[in-house]
Length: 204
Image 1 (cartoon, rainbow, N blue to C red):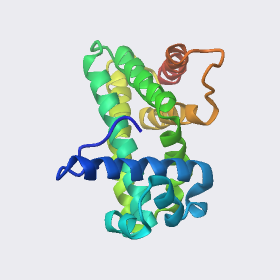
Image 2: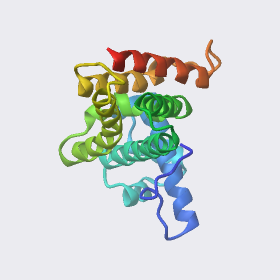
Image 3: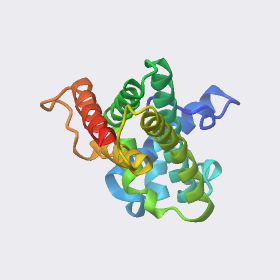
Image 4: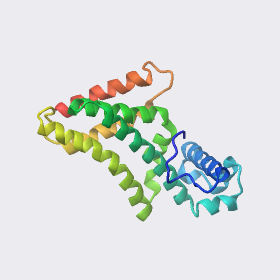
């Protein structure tokens, strides 16, 4: 993953930060290739080039490691969507297009992280699950607010803005499941296509 969250990187030394980044990258690829159940802590430690005991010093359990991977992805996605929407023109349609382009761009730029977020989240329970849901809700709320503002200003005509926002989010998040680098559409063109679909949903 190229974008590291401020909370994920340990600030006490460059070597420790690099080691943590290596662990998170190894965990991401292991979860993507083997699934949460199939990826053992020993496998992740080996891929990260560290000892199993050292891995447990960073993450007491595999659940904690999955939370860290998902939190990092969620934080990076939220930053990208927030920044892009803030720089967009103020009309609801422009803001929604910007949000979709940002989300789809993240899904194509960080396909493994997006796939793991979709497929492995179900293994989390209790407080760990709540933590990831809270992070996801922050991104979802951006879309909900844009849809609600659009309906209020009559730019959008859907009778169900919250449900429409969920549909748009599903549209964006599932791009990672079928996107193929080098396919018929370049990532930018794909993002514009999905933005067109989102506007159609919003306008009812």
